[in-house]
Structure formats: structure tokens, C-alpha cells
Image 1 (cartoon, rainbow, N blue to C red):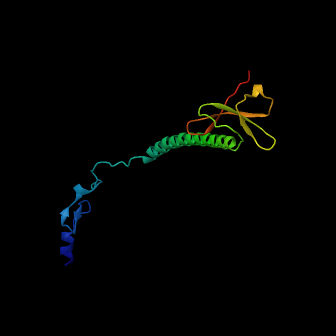
Image 2 (cartoon, rainbow, N blue to C red):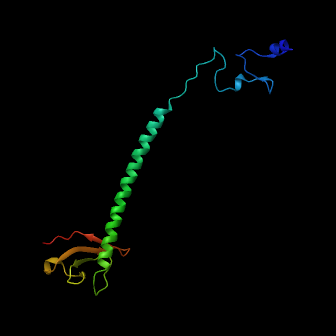
Image 3 (cartoon, rainbow, N blue to C red):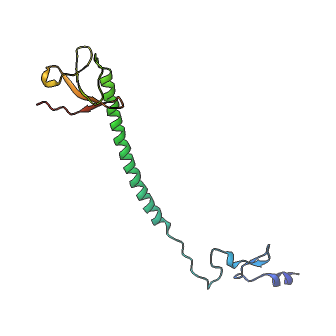
Length: 141
């Protein structure tokens, strides 16, 4: 009985599927014989490094942009809060520049530029169309 089993067994280089009872060498993703083509595994490390480098640069650029936007946002929020907490008795117009001065008890917003008034000047601010205050350069002449 062992002789029958040995006769049915295929040589090692033959790719035979016992369950399907068929040759399956053509289905394999690799060479099944010594004389088969050389299969080289691609070096994906270089691809990975290149991808990581590119993505890292992109992330660094995006992070720098976000940091710049956050700084701008914080400055604008601070300026807006500073002006809205100041005392003023007029309705500011969008696009106009006003002057913030330090008072004894609280800061106050004025129409008078610093060269015409000898009060402690804090800064010049302009109201934008979104009703946010932006600090502007004010050059005394």
C-alpha cells in the first residue's frame, strides 16, 4: 500500500494541489522551479522615507500657517476686547481710526489724535466691517 502512495506523490518541484487535483504553478505569485525567473522584492524603505520627508515638510508648512493664523486671531481678539471694554460715548464708524488712551480708572476711546492731546496714548484702532477692532500704525507728525 505504501508503494501506491509513493507512486501518486508528485516530485517536489511540481506544484500540485491535492485538494483540487490540479497543477497550480501558474497561479503562484513566485517562481516554483529552480529555473524560474528571479523575483526581487522591491525596496520600499526608500519609498517610505521619501513619502515621510514630503509629508513632514507639508505638515511643517501647514503648522507654521496655523501658528501664524492663531497669533493673528489672538492679537485681533485681544485688540477687540481692549477697545470694547474701554469707555466711549459715541458710535464708531466702520473703517474709521480711533485712539485709545489710558485713563485713571479705565481706558477710553477718542476721536482726538495723540499729537493734539497730551494723554497717555495706548494705540490707534480701526473698526472693520465685522465689528472687530484692528490696531493700526499711527505716526505722529
